[in-house]
Length: 137
Image 1 (cartoon, rainbow, N blue to C red):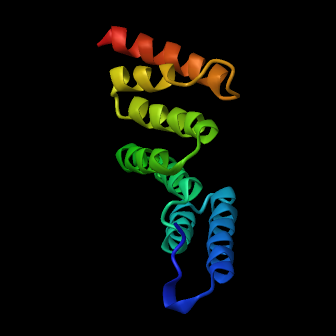
Image 2: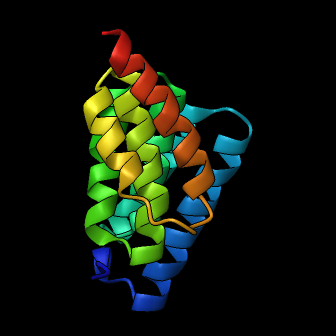
């Protein structure tokens, strides 16, 4: 559901969400992760169910070496995404779990990615790494 803050029309709300999200992408591409995160958070003010913005915030936290916060945002993104997006988000979630040393959870997340999805090969490689790390514990 899209919000209409301050009596904005639906088209104005969509436009503001898109502008904030695009701004976040531009900052992210330049390595300005804190600024990008703020822009993605602004996008969510207009559309709280924007799975891509939730995932983007998670990516910012991952880039800022805050995998626990990344995990929280990836989990939120999973609440609002479609099936195809879910595999991409699940992959990022698995990576944040791996970065926290939660290898069992990471393995489970990698295994949930459907074979044949574009991110599946990367997940399979990371799955192998997670299994090796787990076995060293």
